Amino acid sequence: MHQLTLAEIARGLADKKFSSEELTKVLLARIAQLDPQLNSFISLTEDLALQQAKAADARRANGESGALLGAPIAHKDLFCTQGIRTSCGSKMLDNFKAPYDATVVAKLAAAGAVTLGKTNMDEFAMGSANESSYYGPVKNPWNLEHVPGGSSGGSAAAVAARLLPAATGTDTGGSIRQPAALTNLTGLKPTYGRVSRWGMIAYASSLDQGGPLARTAEDCAILLQGMAGFDPQDSTSIDEPVPDYSAGLNASLQGLRIGVPKEYFSAGLDPRIADLIMASVEELKKLGAVIKEISLPNMQHAIPAYYVIAPAEASSNLSRFDGVRFGYRCEDPKNLEDLYKRSRGEGFGPEVQRRIMVGAYALSAGYYDAYYLKAQKIRRLIKNDFMAAFNEVDIILGPTTPNPAWKLGAKNSDPVAAYLEDVYTITANLAGLPGLSMPAGFVDGLPVGVQLLAPYFQEGRLLNVAHQYQLNTDWHTRTPTGF
Image (cartoon, rainbow, N blue to C red; front, side, top):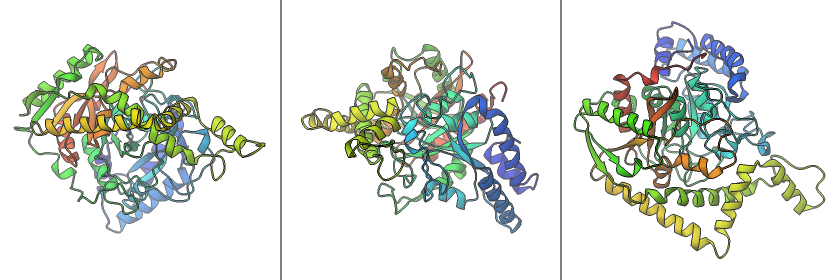
C-alpha cells in the first residue's frame, strides 16, 4: 500500500479494495519503523489520523466521493493545527499548541484528507538543507549522509521514502521546489495569493506561498485542488476562480513554446545537471514543444535582492516572539530587557538570528534606501524580465538546483554557499510566479530536478507539461534503496 500514489489511493478507496483506516494504520506503522533513520516528522498525530480515517470511511459508505476523501497526508510544521504542537522547527515554539487550524489545514480536512503528523523543517523556514531545525537535521532517503533540501525537507523526505503519498510545504525562495529536486519528487509553488497564507507562520510575507509535494504531477494537481482558493481572512489571497487541475493534465503539448534562459547555463551549474536538463528538453520536443533560447538579464541580481528583502521581512515578522505572549520564555529574567534578550537569544537558532540581524540592519535608518528600497527596485526589474519573456514563450525551463544534494554539514561553515543553491528558484518568488520542479535523472545516485515556470495562475499548464513528461519518462517512479 505504501507505494500507491494519491491518484491510486483514490481509485482503491472508491473500488473498496481497502479502507482509509487500513491504509492509515499501515502508514503509521511504516513511519514508526523507518522515520528514526530520516527524522522527517516532528509530531505524529495517530489518534487524530485514525479518527479522520474512520470519518472518511463513513462518508464514503454514505455515498460521498472525492480524490482526497480518506487520503493520508502530512503538514509542514508551520501550518497551525488546532490543539497540536506547531513548532516551526524552533525551540521558540516547542511548547506552542495552535488554537485554530490554518486555512490550508481546514480545507484539506474538509475534503476528507487524513493528517498523519507534522513534518520537520528548517527553523522558521530559514535554510536550504533542513539542517537548522531545533529537532535535528532531516536525512535524504537517497543517501542518509546527504541533505534532503529545505526548508520543506521533512515533507520531501517523508514522501520520497514512501512514508506517505503527499504532503504540504511552503516556498519562500524555493523551499518546495528545491527539496523536491533533491529527493526525486514533484513540487509546486503556486502563484502568490493562490493558496491562503492564513495560519501559515510567516517567514517573509511577500514571498511565502504554500503548495504540494508528491511523487507525480497528477498527485500535485489533486492536492493543489484541495488547497487553492480565495480566503477573505488573508489580505494577500486573490479572488480568482480555481480551475479543475486534473482535467487539464492530458492536453497536448503540440506547439507549446518553451523558453530556455541562457543565463541558467553559467559556470555555477554542474555540467552533468546541464546535460540532464537538455535531455528533458529533447523529451519535450518529441511531444511537440517548440524550444527557444531567451534571456533573463537581471537574474544575476536575484540572490542579493532576495537576501535583503526576505531577512528584512523576517526581522519584522519575528519581532512578535519576545518571551511575553507565547512561545519560549527564559528563566528568571532580571528585567524586561533581559527577558527580551535571553528569550530571543536562547529561543532562536544561529541561522534565524543571522537573518534577523541582516534584516534589521537593512531596515535601519540610513540603510533602508540603500538596501531594502534598492532590492525592491531590482525585484521589479526581475518581474519585467519575466513579463517580456512570456510574450515570447508559454513556459520557461531550466535546472531547479545547480548541484545535487550535498553532504550533511558540508556548507555549515559557509552560509552564503548554501544561499547560492537557491539561484534558480528565488526569481519566481520575487516575481510571484508559479513554479514546478519534476524529476529529471540522477547524478552520482542522487536525484536532479528540472524547473518549469509559467505566467500568473497558469499552474494547470505546469502540471500538464509535467504530467505529459512523466507519462514518457520513469524518473519519478524510482524508489530509494531500503524504502
